[in-house]
Image 1 (cartoon, rainbow, N blue to C red):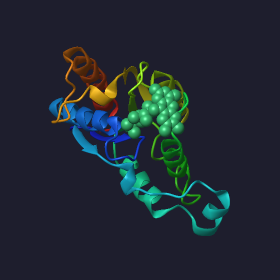
Image 2 (cartoon, protein in one colour):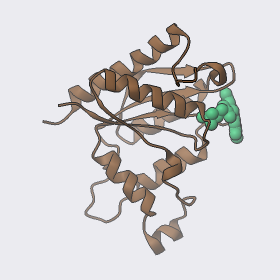
Image 3 (spheres, rainbow, N blue to C red):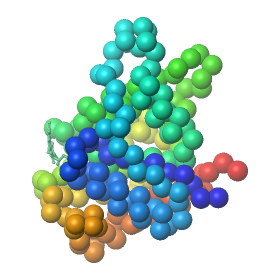
Image 4 (cartoon, rainbow, N blue to C red):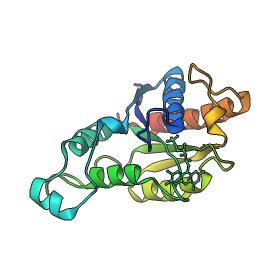
Length: 193
Ligand code: FNR
């Protein structure tokens, strides 16, 4: 009864350090017994949220797909850059579209409510994007997610990974493993059935 967990980054760019964090965290979760899937938000392009667009066309196809994926999972691991001490617009826009209901008979916040979340950040700078984790934790909690208390911000992230995508410093690797372990165990404990 392995929990099914989704891993993604709040950055689209190819060489994103946050994608590296999400990818290596997914491998750690597999090792801890979860069914882990890495997804790339670049594969789910959406326009900037606009209520008139929504009234006219409904949700973008990518938001419908992502919502189904999140709904069928037990939890989300989000590794995100900090932009000026807050969330990057890609991440906020994606979370916002996915929070919208496709119809009145769809339960509210099906993608998020009651599921587990874990958060991490990476930045080339000295704080590792730590300040951005504050609004991210608040946002996911307000969407009804159980955000595990453990989190990690990786400073100097541009040089923290080897060519195989592994974290080179043992202490940091262990810290990320700790976050992932708590994430997997919480998802296991809360998994229905
Ligand atoms: C940044 N960056 C940044 N870094 C940081 O540590 N604190 C910050 O407040 C900001 N602010 C910020 C604003 C904007 C608009 C950009 C584009 C960038 C730098 C950021 O951490 C860096 O570009 C990371 O490499 C982005 O993450 P990915 O794309 O590598 O995952």
